[in-house]
Length: 100
Image (tube, rainbow, N blue to C red; front, side, top):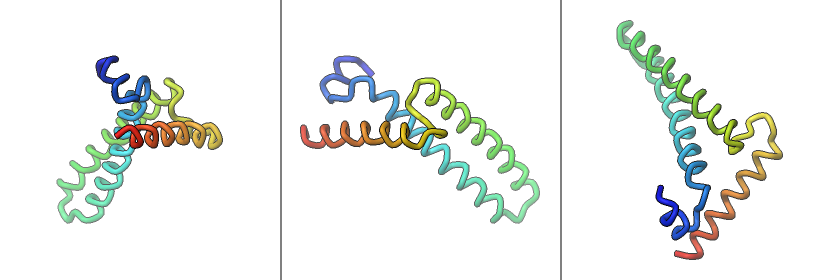
């Protein structure tokens, strides 16, 4: 996103983190949905296809997680640090809502 637009909406460097977090949440939902579909499928061919998709979804989740850990925006092994990060995001969201 253009830096001017980021500044106008008050997000600054938070944009990448917001996008990555949304992508991570979507990846988790996709994994859950594919796993559910596997259990509901009666066709061995469809189950095999879904297992392959599940493998790719888990790999995508891992890549997103690693990216966020490297950027310092996701702390799956440090609850205190993750809560601090989440609170910062919450405060930013509240500030944005007040501007609107």
